[in-house]
Length: 153
Image 1 (cartoon, rainbow, N blue to C red):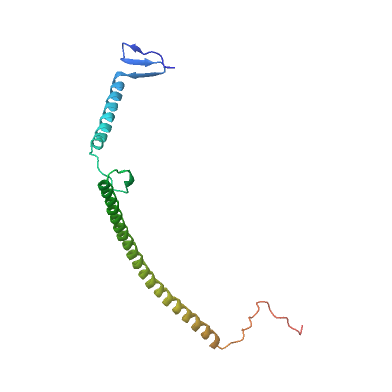
Image 2 (spheres, rainbow, N blue to C red; image 1 turned 180 degrees about the horizontal axis):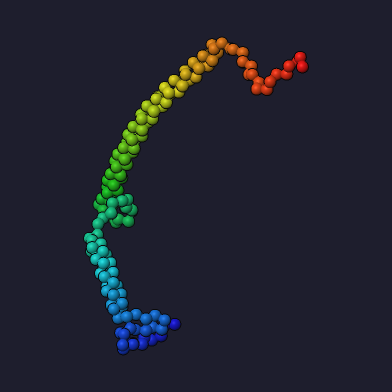
């Protein structure tokens, strides 16, 4: 529980029971709080004072009472949809072009890997033919390190 502040006249400290602060520390805290408030205010004010703008999008035209306003609303929707379709078509074309470039690059990689695989298969066949053509020589018996027993003894 925080008790009422008591001032110590000698050290200029304010004592709140367990918590005590010097007057310098309180001044620093107040200054930081003021700076924080000013920076937040400076950031928020420019955005709050911006004029209202019409956000493009689909509007519900059935709420309009007069035929001219409905027609204008519908035309606005049509214009928005045409711009959106044009933008999306351009974006998709860019993606298709990038995909086609990647496909061509991958085709080149596959062709080079196929060439390497063919070379490896040819080398493997050649090694197998060389192995077959090599005359088979009987294995040479190894001399044993133990002396042979003499049957005469």
